[in-house]
Image (cartoon, rainbow, N blue to C red; front, side, top):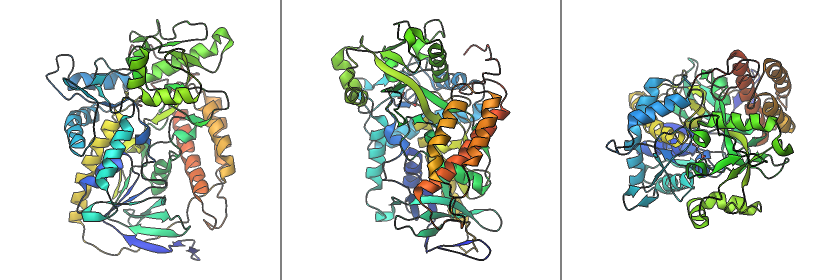
Length: 526
Ligand code: SIN
């Protein structure tokens, strides 16, 4: 890599594709597979299956049979709007949920196996749902099965018109032409050389941002890369303040930080209840749906209960699943069982210690319902995008569905763009790679957890903005001579944290996942 006198970057290598997709979760792979026949490169900084999708437990919320007497797409729409606390885009909700059944059918045709009984697919319930409409796979390994099926379909790299996956390649930045249109992606290869992939369309499917916080259910790859790349490319973001905290993440001690094991909400769907250290029910009297209230309400209730330190315990409550027969629990929740047993807890005999942790970013890069961002040629799908489906709080298990539907829709849009494009070698200017000192990562995460977690106030948000900004200096001073995955991730975390904190400062109301302790919580019944 070298830098010109004008400060631009000269890449070490170049490649050309019709489409470059960043991320190998359900959205990115669905989009890539639907673009079969085009030259599609899928870039991921880790192994192909290292995506948030692989870790999703609960399932996919979808109404497959409109004639189900207990359910309808209209009811699913209503539940989504209620969970979103008035900030969903109703058009996005209606369209995405209506297209869900077809998208699930096509996923099954691609080889995904969902758990079935004598009368078809089994369905369960999660928080905020008024009907049993969550389908699942492998008990509580739904995301892993979806990821397996999609990667198996992708098959060997580049064969028979299928997408090629470039593993261990870190996306650095969207590359724009002189008109501000996206024309490619700069990438750090495993050998340390920086490449330019020219493409007619760039699709961000980078997943989540959980590692903005000290504890998260997200895998290590979820470092807000797509948000930061979109910001640097000049795309609009919205609802960035709405980080959803999952109420029941396995708690194994105060020093247990980083990626933490999820205890799926479906355990509550099957009858488990939250209790405090004195055995008192946490959700009784808080919401008519009690333990199956929308997720933001449950996480807030736990946080408030812990503030009063019942039984002297301030850092976790318990999920009591002992009423579920042991063989049923083990068969239904193999992933949760294994995580509990590894921590020395037998969930069939003792309550599981749990605490909220960062789980899902409801906001993100603003897109239309074809996945197009405000930057021409740049699309965003899946968790990194903000379609308007989630509003201020995502309804449980709506995310895999959104990834599927938007992956399909973006593929249709991109195929049209590629067909309409006249190939030409545009003059492209690459900016030096982002970089910040990774030594500040733990401080950033601690700052975000203490000042932008469940409960925020203006002084805390302002102090956090200064603290985070001070961590964002370019580390090598020459624009990337020592660029590493850690330095790029740190720059991305700093950029995304700054956006989240600024959005949280500006929203001076408490709504959904965004609880401003210096503003009253609205008395709106949800
Ligand atoms: C869970 O299984 O509890 C998580 C599902 C989701 O985040 O939608």
